[in-house]
Structure formats: structure tokens, C-alpha cells
Image (tube, rainbow, N blue to C red; front, side):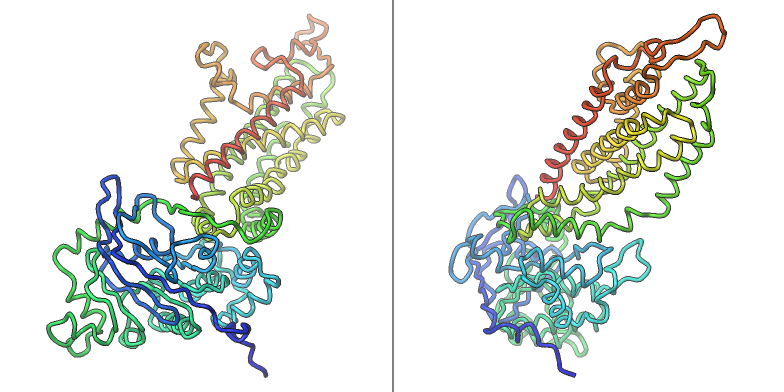
Length: 570
């Protein structure tokens, strides 16, 4: 059997490496700009594997973040420069030549390994994404797990930590980068998995790529395989040069027998103030990653949207058809159908049946509002790490992602409410001729609720806080909307106008009672006309006006959600 060609063999020439040099580099953190890196001079050459070692808090991750041109929002370059092949950073020339593999794997759990790399290749503008992904799978020895899901809480069978790390590396190598930065790629892996990662890094360097990696407790075999070594302590360089000369240069004696060289060097350079350094870098790396200069995506907007739409559907299809979720919704609708069975078809109709049906028309939009708002809260927080990373790499615009992600939910979750509501509609004997208007009202109500949930989740990425705010918002607007108390203070009535369920309830009442006549239960009056049936708390406007308000709320909430997402993934 013929061996598939490696990625290097697919290229007519060796990958052009991108060397990086930093000169007298000092980086500060926070409002007072406390230095985290001090007077660093060094670099990573093309065709070489440069390792950065140091205790926790020594500035390793800060150095990589600075070289990658992705800064935590608190970091500031106070002095010095970073140059790429002797030139200052230029996003049009350098952004797509620098790959950054972060310490945490930012991958969508429900996609398979093959799907993950295929979509990544497509977003990077590859003419044949599937073929490119297959080559990368072979290159990284991921063929056996290619069709397994990345894995997460709801996945029974998931790939291992080492395989997940290789997928993250492959995701970035699809760039054909000249410079690869890796933040502790072997952390948390067993020795066998770590050795595989190291072999990948060595292979990259032999192909001409400049590799700069921070590593934690490398074995002696790895240590002696480094082409260059930088030892950091408290933000300063303790040693820079050939790793084989490191012990002689900074240690008073050779390492004890059986002790790894890297561990011995850490013991030599660590001082009593290592804990202070840890606190400093923890402060430096806390917060969101900002994009210093965002390179434009490789594809036009429409192509980004189509690819992301497919990916969002595949990545979240299990959430959209969750059996427990469907069972919950179906059970509530079935119970409603049972309790209100035949109430609307009773003849003659009396004010008693009006009250019963009004209860159903109130319950339905309120139930769907709470249900869909809660579901929407999870949408953006679940994807935040992935979107932030991919935006930093310039894969797509935030508008393309936002529209793709929300479109998938709208076409699935939001449409469930009117479709499942058919269960109670005909069972309750509501007006058959008005079913279309009834379902349209529920759809717009659900769209409002989902949009409001997206808005809260986009601005408040903490799910506990977002859930609290969602509950307060819904209950407060309903209470001030006149559902429970008629005498709402004037200064609070405006808050009730934000209750979109109020407009949905009003529209449903008008749709059901339009032009209808009902007998008085006491038999003393002849009829109750429409104007007398609709509660004074409901807006006296047309159904069309109520639906227009619902549509306006949905648009407003989605616009706010977009700006919140843009802010929190930048």
C-alpha cells in the first residue's frame, strides 16, 4: 500500500520560516504598568525549535502573547521591540504566517476531529478543505480517531487529551505558518502523548518553521532535542543559548544522578520570590484576549456565513434535538391540551369559558418566554473561547458568526414553540380560522424571548449571573405590566412596556375574541362584545400593532446581543 504523502511533500518547496527577534523588551501590566518582562533580548530562528522554560509566573505566556501580537487587555509594551525577519509587525504580511496554539484547547465538542479540521481549512480559504484535512490527520497521526467527536460532558466517547492537543496544533498548522508559538503544549499529558507532541514540533523545525514553545518539565530526551533554550525567572532571562551548555553556564555543579536536567535548572534559578512572580503573571494573564490588529478573513463574508452555518448546525445539533428538552416541551403542551380540552368549543360560550381560555392564552407565551430565554443564555458563553481564538486568528468576522449561530437556533428551537403549540390549539377548540395568526404571534413572542436571552448571555458571559438577571427581568416586567396588579405606579408603568409577553397576550386575546359573542353565565345580559371581554390592562391597539412591537423588540434585542458579543470576544 502506498504511503500518503506528508504535508511537506505536498509543497514544492520547504516552508518559508519566519524568524522573530525581541530586543530590550519590557512589558508592563495593569494601570501602574508593573513590569512582567524586563529587558529581554533574544529570538527564535527559522528551522529551529526554541524552548522557553521557567517557573510559574516567570513570564513565559506573556512573552508568547507579546510575540503573537495578541495582548491581554492589561498588558503594555513599555520598551523595546519585536521584529519578524527584521521587520516591524505588519498584519497584512505577518498575521497569516504566525500560528498560536494556546494552552487551553478551544474546540467544539460535538464536532468530529475530521469535521473540526475540515471547517478550519475551509475558513482559511483552502480550495479542497476535505483533502487538506485528510493530509493533516495523517501528518498528526490522527487517522484512527478522525471520526470520533472531540468530546465533552454529553459525549460518551471522546478523544484523549493528547489527541485533542494534536487537533489544536493541526488547526493552526493549516495556515502553513512560518512561525509557530505553543503555550505549554505538553502540559497535562502522559509521557507517551507528550513525546508525540515533541516529535511534531521537531518535524516542524526540520521543515524550516520557526518553533517557539513554552514547556513544563520536559524529559532529558526532549531537553537535549532543543535547538535553543531561554530560561526565564521573574521576567528576566537567566540563560539564553545552546541547551547543552546551560548547566555549565548557570549551575554550580552537575545535576544529581537521576534528576532531569530541566528540573535541576528550575531548582537552580528559582528564588524565594517565585511566589511573587506567580502573582504578577496571574494578574497579567487574567481577562479577555484582545486583538491588537485584526487581519481580514481569507474569505468573503457570504462564504464565511455559509461555512459557519454548516458548522454551527453540526456542532450544536445534539443540543437542538436534546431528548430531555423535547420531552419537557411536549409534556407541557400535552398537559395544556388535557386541561383545556374542548373549552373553546363549548356552546353556548359564557364568560366562564372566556376566563378559562384567557388563562391558556396567558400561559402559552409566558411558558415559551421563560423556556427559550434560558436556552439562549447558554449560546454565546458556550462558544466564547472558540470564537475569541478564531477571531484573533482572523478566520471570520463577528457578524458572520453571529448571524450563522442565531440562524441555526431560530430555524430549530424558536420554530418549536408554534409547532408544538398546535397540540393544545385544536384540543382546546380555539378558532380554526385564526390558527395562522395565533402561531405567528407565538413565533414572534418566542423570537423576542430568544433574542432577549441572547442579549443577556452576550453581555454577561457568567451563566449564574445571566440566569439571575433573566429571572429578575421577566418577573419585574410582568409584574409592572399589569398582569397581577392593576394599580401600577406611574413611574413604573414604563417598565411594564418592556414586557413583550404583554403584547403577545394582548394579540392572542384579540385574535381569539375578535367579533365573537358570548352569553352571560347569569343569563341576565344578552351578549358580551369584544370590547368588554378584553381586559383593560391590555393595550387597545390592533393585532398588527402588537405584532409589530414584538418584531421591534426582537430586532432591538438582537442588535444589543451583537454588540455585546463583539465586545466580549475581542
